[in-house]
Length: 562
Ligand SMILES: *[C@@H]1O[C@H](CO)[C@@H](O)[C@H](O)[C@H]1NC(C)=O
Ligand SMILES: *[C@@H]1O[C@H](CO)[C@@H](O)[C@H](O)[C@H]1NC(C)=O
Ligand SMILES: *[C@@H]1O[C@H](CO)[C@@H](O)[C@H](O)[C@H]1NC(C)=O
Ligand SMILES: *[C@@H]1O[C@H](CO)[C@@H](O)[C@H](O)[C@H]1NC(C)=O
Ligand SMILES: *[C@@H]1O[C@H](CO)[C@@H](O)[C@H](O)[C@H]1NC(C)=O
Ligand SMILES: *[C@@H]1O[C@H](CO)[C@@H](O)[C@H](O)[C@H]1NC(C)=O
Ligand SMILES: *[C@@H]1O[C@H](CO)[C@@H](O)[C@H](O)[C@H]1NC(C)=O
Ligand SMILES: *[C@@H]1O[C@H](CO)[C@@H](O)[C@H](O)[C@H]1NC(C)=O
Image (cartoon, rainbow, N blue to C red):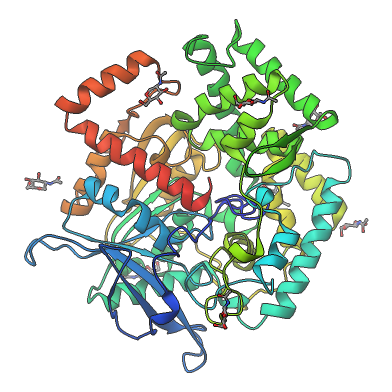
């Protein structure tokens, strides 16, 4: 989720995306929007198109939106071809175009070559138009949200004034958005993106949707299945959000397992031993205490950091975000966190800053050319996340004391409630709410094919309770449990999960009820794990899948910054 430019992350785009990974290679402005899929080569090996859809589905004679779509084309023969699979990397605000460009080849390793793998930027996001923003230029945005803050949730525990501060910022953002983008914002919603997915599917000449959505992508997939139960071909939702929580702008329940993920860090660090965990101490409780001491110190003694490419004050908010961020992807980030914390304990914040926060400062000359009129804001992950989350949900008119109370309740659920409560605070100034937008029911008894629902046993932002609830809301769907710590199956690569994914998409086979997979990598890999993995790599075809999975996780992190 949204923070600033992260994904299902808030701050600037807490959950979502950095976009712009691919923009040096292809000029989307030069591609004329069409009512058909008019593919043009792009990004070497990919094909791109812009599909015209109605901005307002209730008034299809009015203005249009144009959805940016990129496919990693199937290489199979016509008779083996099984159609498109639409992909969403999360956010909201994550660019599906960037995701497929970065990860299409690896996804194809997992799902096979019989599908077109289709990344699209949801309306409002990155290369799709209208591109949401309430800033007039990248420079204006950078003055409001510095690059090192763009994926950070401001901690509401930073000071006693933090809630009031963030409330005030939310009022400004809401007012600017209404004044500068009020004409279209109300249409940039998940229900309309679900309608767009149906249009994309139909433009491929298919009747039913094939889809794999991660994190926020589960909201999109569930919404689609609830709105169009008879158009469900194959739908995988992975890292599942509670729909009631999403549409009520109250994500508190998403944090019920966050502290368990942190516990997995301290327990795992102790178990890994001093050779494999740099922040080791002789008990898990001692590691927890050492971590708390760093947090307490960060508030009163923030550390100045100057690196060759950037600089910032490393205080409580940044430390809390670095820790939170690592919980998304333990098998790749716990060791990095441990090294960062160990250096921090010695008074050196550069390691952890570099691992989790660092971004080069904005420079006018290096930014996109904002006088180019059509697609001015490729990096709009923050604005897209805020506007989709807030326009989807009920209107939030909480005042400061109500938000303070909300945060107070949320911190009882998780020690990361100070970050996560921003998802509600940011909506308190939001004014774009469309009458008649989707508001449930959040399920359907008669989907034309069962959904495959994937949940990790310890997911820091989409707990398995959301997956269990969603399976009940879509009778016939099946839960595949991944016994792992981390956010979505993407962040805990599992050859077992990949086998079930492929069977589902290729043959329509669901796992047996009660199936549990395990991840391929431990939380703190040792050099022994390294050598066995390397050894197996040559012998075991599963190792290729595992490597592809790690590539997808890295790509998703680049795209969503989480
Ligand atoms: C599915 O169920 C809903 C309500 O339960 C009903 O309105 C709809 O017509 C049904 N669709 C199909 C294809 O049976
Ligand atoms: C938010 O959700 C939590 C957990 O479900 C609940 O306890 C709380 O009352 C809700 N707050 C609001 C303002 O809806
Ligand atoms: C901090 O640690 C980094 C990474 O180990 C190192 O390059 C740098 O020189 C250290 N800075 C100071 C001031 O010791
Ligand atoms: C930006 O775009 C405008 C209009 O297309 C063009 O005239 C101008 O030269 C461009 N500036 C830069 C720095 O590329
Ligand atoms: C905030 O709203 C609540 C509920 O409407 C109200 O009781 C309270 O007085 C308000 N507080 C402030 C400071 O306006
Ligand atoms: C807020 O910060 C203080 C340190 O200033 C810390 O003692 C407290 O545990 C923090 N609260 C939460 C919920 O993390
Ligand atoms: C699909 O089913 C066929 C026939 O039963 C089988 O040979 C094939 O291995 C299955 N493919 C996958 C990916 O499960
Ligand atoms: C494992 O291998 C990777 C890449 O070869 C290396 O970066 C990492 O340091 C190794 N980890 C350990 C614990 O040896």
